[in-house]
Image (cartoon, rainbow, N blue to C red; front, top):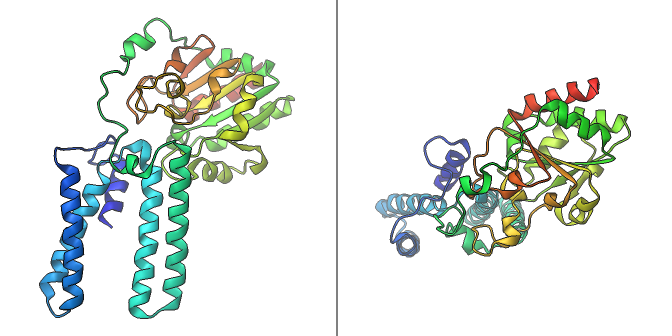
Length: 330
């Protein structure tokens, strides 16, 4: 429960930072609290009348839930949510055994199993182990990471909506890459309208979905389904990556780490080895973003300074609305 509160706080940006919260001796303390919880659990079973044991178990368990969640960075929150979801299922199943309630046992087992399976799938998609996520490896200071000024200085090319509209009007194939920025701006309906407009002009439009895009499992799928986007147009990472070389324009809306090419090129990067969408192989890349601020991994993205990349700065929804108007006028 308290772990879920921490995850909610990190997602909403209320009190805790998105980056991992780490301190010396954190892991030994977690091990100690875990062993203490087990000991208190044995005490509760052996002496059910000892009310103090219940209070201590709740207190220690709550503290452990907080300390296990705060080292997880914002980029790993989809994995954390899936894992916390599985914990809730296991808790429900355990309650079912205590109460001899078959419905609780069955539903809890289903939720727990599905959560664990989803956690495994997402860890595999990020090329990281579950322990790597839980120990908060992403977001720590890394002295080998390039400075943002070194990456961007004099290389970033800004474009207007009219310039991007001319590119889209002449494109035969466009791939939309939605990210958390689209979710924040609630721009999914406008993105659908832009895609419909381009398709009306004879352009092939597809959506590239990264498994950990957004803040929760399936975040982009849910948003695009809400906007009535045809499910057949949603392409998973493995199936769409080979086609980026034949893509005229990749339109990135609020995505960062999931399209960062340093995951492939820099072994010392915090996201090294993480599978990404190969948008940099497109003929032209257009990035809609408020600024050049880093993603949750805290590192600059060389894609934004690439020769074939144009930046359209602004709010996601307003930028797409400007594109729609510009395409209609083209």
